[in-house]
Amino acid sequence: MTKENVLEKKFNFSLFRKENVLEKTILIKNRNRIYENKPIIKLTNVSKKYLIKRFFRSDIVHTALLNINLKIFKGECFGIIGKSGSGKSTIVKCILNLEKITSGKITKSKLNSRRDIQIIFQNTKSSLNPSQRIDIMIMEIIKYYKLESNNIKMKKYLNNLLSDVGLEKEILERYPHQLSGGEIQRVAIAKAIAVKPKVIIFDESISGLDLSLQGQILNLLNFLKNKYNLTFIFISHNLNIVKSFCDRISVISEGELVKVGFAEDILKSNVDDIKKLFVKNLNR
Image (cartoon, rainbow, N blue to C red; front, side, top):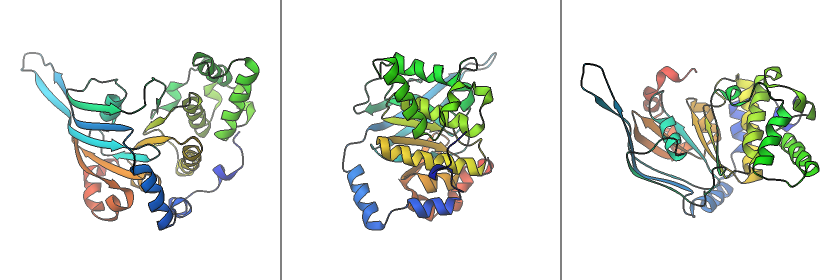
């Protein structure tokens, strides 16, 4: 059962934008604070190619990414949009070292341990062990990373996590199949922030939720981002979401970087051109 608090208010994108967009002077000040520093993640001329072997025919080379140059700064929410197969997820896999780049360079500043970058996938439920209760699942993470020294402190740490993601303590005794879609999202977020990461990647993680639940999760993420000083990389097909939630947006098409800039600048003009890049996915 989720708490009836500010995270659960009735949601629409225009209201979210109105409530979370700062006055211009404050916005400029905050952006100066974020973008005056060196990027936390930098991609320089990154390319990724796959060799596709074919029987009785010549092998072919598929270029998933071609000369990608991106800078992601500490404290921002960086959006990546594009149609399926455009290379969005490949960028993330390369950042996470799940895929080896063919050429170029990826620099990660002060992101030394594997727990510094966490990811929440589209099929969130599949990341939860169906045979484990929620309390056991999260406590194992706390123990593995030695985030607290004894059981009393670990339970307090766990309860604070639940409070931060808007869940009641009763959820701890349940199994994943006993959770609603919104509760599963919140548990996955709790698992991610439990390890005290610096960057969280959301790979279409809220696309399967209905509009109201999407709004609740966006409000929750906005709260957590400010509280924990997190950096978000947000992959989505939904223009409304990235416009409302992201500081900057990059548009990827067929493995190439088409546009990158502040959300209001990217989507204020040439929206029709952007839509054409992934029109088949707009209603997902």
